[in-house]
Length: 126
Image 1 (tube, one colour):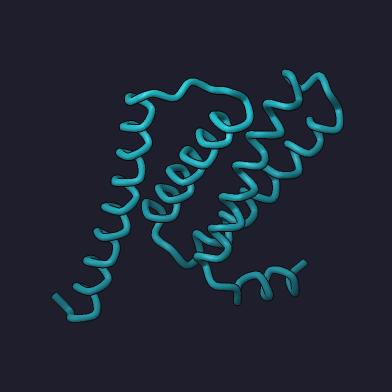
Image 2 (spheres, one colour; image 1 turned 180 degrees about the horizontal axis):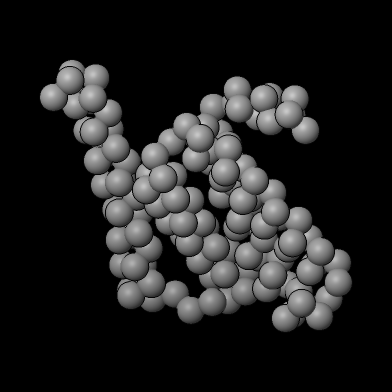
């Protein structure tokens, strides 16, 4: 297992984060399809996705700040899941949903900007 962990550690942390987000969105979608965990194939697939997403997120956190990584993971996962819910399951979509998703995206952008500013200060030594 250590050799696998070392290989994963060499992958770009944003690529790991992206894969983790994709698995989280897939897991949430499969959870909906499991119909309250009553359909075994979807239930098992949900569990596998969440195990994989948290594993990848754990490796991501070795290289990225917690607030940034979790903020992006949660925010992009929320937007992705909402879009899938609207497109595949007919979830409601109106101005409030649109505004809410825009605010989530704006929050992710601000988190990323704050992280970049902090890194710049560390580099300069301020």
